[in-house]
Image (cartoon, rainbow, N blue to C red; front, side):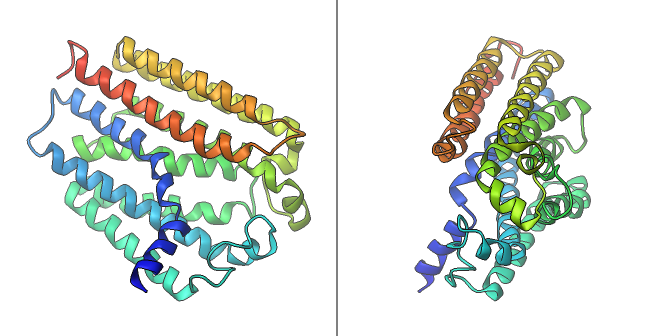
Length: 294
């Protein structure tokens, strides 16, 4: 019974999609170590608590979103099989899981440093409040992006105990990247959003223009990454990483057409997983191998 419930819980929160944001958070931590002059004495412990904080915050956000959207999910043909509408997991269990995930997040923030713990309520408010935004703003995609984008800045604070404005370029990059692929994903719900009077960019501009907006957001992601390379004086491998991300995003947009959304899942899940992983590989290699680093 426990194993079954654990499996259902991991399915509900899409645990495997942690690969989207975690590599960017780890990159923020590595950049902070680099600026500190090397891998600190408690570096591995710091990375462990950063990962646990990410897991806690993301798990809380996903479970809370499923709770808040349960009635909407039940009406949407695409989402009616999700765990709460389908009766696979109860609301009470999801509430308990959300609280436990929040507790893990606060515990990890406490272990990191004072500033992380003081900012933890604000960070949690951001990631939880996204669940309501589709009810009143077409910029819900950007709010989701910001919720993920604060991860690398938070990781920087976890390492250094203060915020350097330069790392906000990585926050911006993740925000634009996430907002862009969320716009693409939400094109699937265009008709349902219109019928239910939910707010989204596809509903306002139509699917064709929404896909153009997604391209613009991803262009801004690449620009933000290039600005971070310039601000932190990163090397050729980091630039190659930006090039790899750009190539993957171009391919991603080629998968989706206004009159053919059949490959949205491939664009959303597969390609964005590769974007985050390849980005981390190139940037971690640049940080560790560049002569001026470590």
